[in-house]
Image 1 (tube, rainbow, N blue to C red):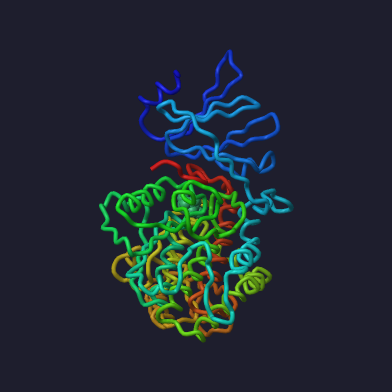
Image 2: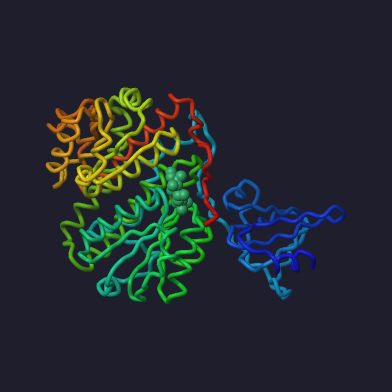
Length: 464
Ligand code: M6R
């Protein structure tokens, strides 16, 4: 009763467990923050993440806002803030979430970088129709005739998820020839967006608990739109709020710096782009090419990881820099942002990412003798334009680290050349991002930073 009365007065976001000195009872409540109850044999558990409960029990209850749970070791009573009792709705967690132990790796980030090939195999498995050259994302519950009528697509995310959403935007426009826009979730609802109920909205998130993205989803629901989740954590708040979508199946991601979730978000969005593309502007042949390309990616990443190029030389060049500039064009522009985000968050080096063509409109002023610039230039239709930007940088004394396709003459433009295996241009982010993850990882190590738990950051950001 005291908890209930207090909660009526409370403002803000919380996930609470109230303990009592003289009673063997825990009272739990939430508002905005995740709270999950695990039911064991003669024991109960409370967590903010369902998968933390997996070693103890698979039977969980996701508490919702406005609900209160009263727990003893053998009982669970649920009620609303108004005092109405109701029965728990027990969910049984899937068994195959994956292992989250470090094993032989020194850090989770490195482990997760190396897990990308298998995580991608898991993500695409059973979701590609090779004969029809199509994607098969059953969780979307969208038929070709529905997709053919979609007026536009909007994608929401924060940080790495936003960068993946930007890549999704480019792939959807390219394959389906309908407008697609990526939005930063934290801005979305505050700009009073106009929602078209016929449009498709995607909430892209690893944790499924990011408060900014959850609020954006709720804003769309409030305005009559529907949102599909592109989520890693099964049963998370955003997955449940959306009620439909695609699980990206990365398995547990422990390092604060996201790596394998980024790749799987991009892969999931590429399969959606293919699916909507095939209902509109993409031919079966083009579809098959993309499918072949996607199926090759895990192997190509393994090939690259076997022979990573001069990553440590790149680390030497950037580790004491005042600022590192990341540049890419087209589909590599969001990859540049992702590289900058990774280096900034774990090595604390100020980084700036720009579409390469925009460099001459401002960031070029930063360049001086020896300034390091990381370019991403796969073998696509904008490569020639990127070369012009490389020349402009070099003319100001900048030193160029270049991520490019193996065997491409563009290597001659670089001070440090990092080759990746040749790849389908639309899928190049899945390869070009890997050296940047490694550069960030090794730079953080060289600077003595805490790679997996960087300062001031949390894995799930559950406040707006
Ligand atoms: O769990 P989410 O994917 O919604 O998280 C979004 C961002 O907080 C997250 O990507 C953050 O930017 C990472 N630390 C990036 O490595």
